Amino acid sequence: MKQKLKSIFLVNHEQADKGPAQENQQDPHPQEGATLTLQHIIDQFDHAADFVHKSYLNERLQVLYFSHLVNEDRLERDLLPPVLTAEAPLALLSEQSQFKPVTDTKKCVEGILSGMAAIFCEGNAFLIDVIFPVSRTVAESETESIIIGPHEAFTEQAYTNLSLIRKRVQSSHLKVIKLSVGEVTKSDIYVLYIKDITNEDYVNEVIKRIKDIELDAIHDTNMLIQCIDDAPYSIFAQFLTTERPDTIASKLVSGRIVGIMDGSPTAFSAPVNFFEFFSSSDDYYQRWSIGTATLFLRFTALIITVTLTALYVSVTSFHYEMIPQNLLLTLTESRSRVPFPPIFEALLMETTIELLREAGARLPTKIGQTIGIVGGIVIGQAAVQAGLTSNILIIAVASSAIASFVIPNYVMSASFRLLRFGLIILAGFWGNLGLAFGLAYIVVHLSGLTSIGTSYLSPIAPFEPYDWKDVFMRLPFSALPKRPTQVKARNKVKLKMKR
Image 1 (cartoon, rainbow, N blue to C red):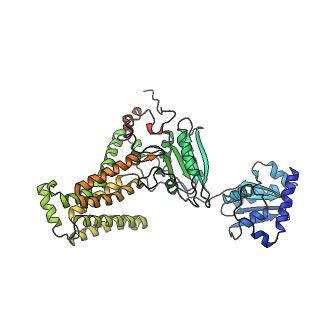
Image 2 (cartoon, rainbow, N blue to C red):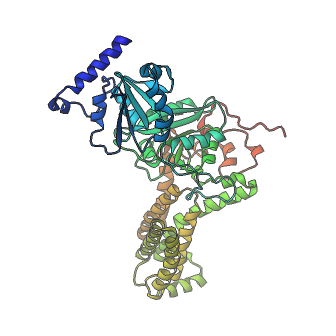
């Protein structure tokens, strides 16, 4: 061991004696297994203003770290003084378990970048965990607000998110696998599942897909899931994303796989089916009858937001016979001043609504609410008075927009808002036939989608009527003793009530 330490120390001095030309020939990206030298580590962080390099004991001891990633007070007040006052600093570093020896350049660089401090002493290198990242406190989710139930939301700090999950799933069977993604960013990904419940074939498939990613940078969970989708060109998400720890805990208990990413406040779960995007935590915190009624309301909102405006275009363009006579007179009078055909009228108003929605989302909260309300009222009233649109279309477009807000998942809501434009165009050219063709295409497309190899339309296809009790309705917990069929859980029973 001493001979090895001495050789590393000699290599360190030889590296320091090399000329500038030889230093410039070093590989800027250290390879795993490369010999660790102090000068090599310093060269890796050349021209980094936030990189700290301190020398102690007549340069016998060197400390390297990033000032904004570590707790400098703890390092200089608690950890370094015993080492600096010891008669044999190297012996003390080797004896203390908190100082982890490292001999590989790549691992040392990765440790420093992750927030650890590197200590070089007499040719030996050690890493010590003094990570102190800046992060926001746990707050309420702004995109998934609920009335009843916990209001905690994930943060951008992975360890904080893991603690929120561990607090809710206090089981030794909860397993956490750490992966890294991004050739440049080296983002940490944590895959979670409950052993003896989750189907490990799905776990292995998720891990394999994450390991196969070859990108320079992935900054958010929503970027990650686009790289591991079964059908990346589909408009529908095949992974459920959420900011709520209680939702993730329920997904784990139901036998699903969960993934969280350091730097992202969003977690994903899989496998998922189409109907999960219409479920909310509120459904389980309220009485089962209220939860069931709310689910029916959301599916009704789905039909309204997808078809109402397109149906208006279809009826007013080709199928006046479908309109009751009393309403037909009102509609004719309303459209008498409109110079555009219904398809252009509808596309104009739908685009205006989307512009108002986007403006309200990007502006500060107080101003955004004012723009959304005042802008919608003023523009709608002015458009009718100017003869650019009819009153009935304004009602149809507004109803479609309101219905889209009822869908609790923003990603799914955005998908159907985009599909609405396609259905309007089809209805404008081919009437009800075009609308029926568009809806049929959506159903066929959904039928062909999978999530980690499982059916996206489960429990309709394949037909699993037992699971309908927790999909199209929310029956009492005593009526839901088993986990969903889709997850193929090793332990299918999740509830054992004595009464």
